[in-house]
Length: 426
Image (cartoon, rainbow, N blue to C red; front, side, top):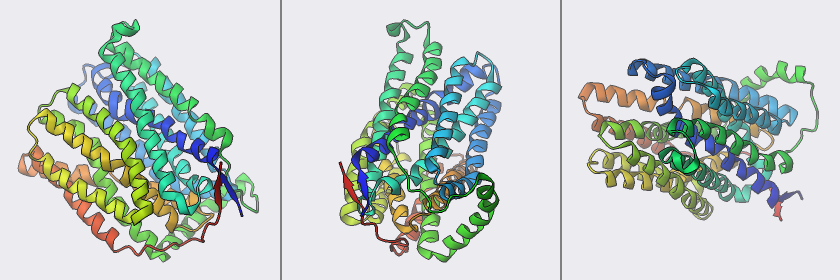
């Protein structure tokens, strides 16, 4: 009977603490605003928005295309952790490089951000795929939630510090807010690297019985990808879940990406929006832990459906927001279910896939996640253009949550893999 150490589990979970700094400080926080106001200063707003959107889109598309192939190669060679370290270093170096980009150098900023985004997203493919290596199936819900919880608190802490430095640069001996924001990119790189070290040293992954050469792995990856696709098609539980996941995670991603723009369109001050983002991070920390317990007690699907129901209510509520405190309530309640939906989706999927094929199956899982948040914004744009109302556009996301929830309810939850009798030890 195999053993799983608590040290390897916590080392794995702290990677979420590490890389969430990029998600909060860079992706959600400072990069979009700094790109427009500093690196692309003087450029028409529509043009800077175009290039920012293209950068995000290309980054997501690259990862969506290569993730299943990389996952297959990682499984064959037992090198999921090796790929994770590679993409982590790519993200760390590129994030730190943003500190060196000067005023008006938007091309360099876009390129570094694109590569950092690839490092972040591709790294998550292998981070997710390592979950079965550090957790017994009995505790997948709880342990998946642990990673998300640490991610929210870790990313939130660094972001909070960077926000304070930006608002009060004189407190830290800085010249201005621009210098504080540039330093925040360097802080992300350092934070990401330091807190990734436990995973690099103490997480062990299951090795394949037969070792293949790099050339052999490359030659067989395309064939294995096709085989995995056929395998997924033969597992009705898996492919139905993936469709449901794509729909409701698209809704979640759309809200996360469009909330700032929506708040600005309603006339809320930037300080209100930043504060709301911080609220989301810190509320999501304990909430993710609680949802992990809900998943263990009532099943992960029940927890996900609870979260989807809350998001449906929030979509309706957002239509009637008038005051700043309404936006704070929206952020707080969203934070209560956001981490739970994400963590339980990951743990539920891990119970459905065959053992020993986590890399390739999570490659498809992450591919669906990267193709998400495309349909939602398009629906919002169409509704906004058709009705002339930003408020009504949010209701378009309801379609994604309702459809995703309806399909998820039809998924027959059964373990496609073998039972896992490994014990977790100290």
